Structures are given as structure tokens and as C-alpha cells.
Length: 170
Image 1 (tube, rainbow, N blue to C red):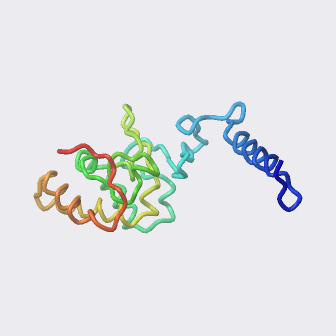
Image 2: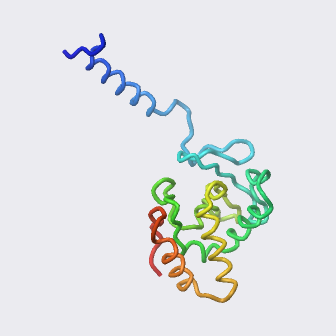
Image 3: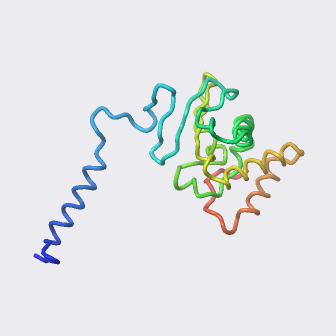
């Protein structure tokens, strides 16, 4: 039995392990990340992102209320460019930290069958997410193909940024 500064080291390891195990057990009656919604249709994802459901892409989530008009417009535009942004990777590291698959996921968590959307506030805190979406949408508006835009984004963000999301190749 090792004793360090009057503390049984094995007991300290056990206490730490016990604390980790207790904190990892869900509380009885708790909802999973995907199930829990408050009265406004918002919930906190396990990665810390706030998600909110609205009836359509025309209705932006309330988490954008205190954001700039520019950011609100970027979110609206992202919702209207699903095909484009689902083919563009994000380079902020959110593929690993938030399980995102593309730049679209930084704005929209899910498109529901009833045309409602579950928005994600991830991009409100991430300049890379916003920049990639804006550049992609502007290039698309100027007539570039999704493949050309993808190549441009991959080239521009290949050094000095996080791992790209696992967006399938075109």
C-alpha cells in the first residue's frame, strides 16, 4: 500500500474511477441528446452545440436573435444551399468534435420530412465554418461547379486548419 502525503494512493485511484463512473451514468428519466427538447424546441447536444427546430427554413432559430444580420443571412443562405454545402468539408475540426460530415452540418443538424429544420448553433462560434460557407455560396452563385468549389476549399484550407469533415469525394 503506497502512501503519499498521508493519502492511500490506491484509495485515491479508486475514488477517481468511482467519480468517473458515477458521472457517466445517465440520470433516471433523462432524455438522450437527440430526444430532449424544451418548450421552444431547443436542446443542448452532447458536444455543447445548441439545436433548435423551426417549422421551415424561412423561420430562423431564436439562438440567432442576438446575432448580427449578416450571420442570420448566412444561416438562411446555408439552409437554401443544402446540396452544395453537403459536398463541402469543414476544416474547423468539427468532424471529430461534433461528428459533422460536411459544412452544412455546422448550420443545420437535420432536415425533417415535414420541411421543418433542426438548426445547429455551431457556426455562430466558428469563423472557419462561416467563411467556408460564404465562399462556397458566392462561388456557386458565380457559376462554379460544386466540384470546382470543393477543390478550391480543399486547397485553401489544407494547411493550418483542423482535419476536414469526412465529406464523401465528388
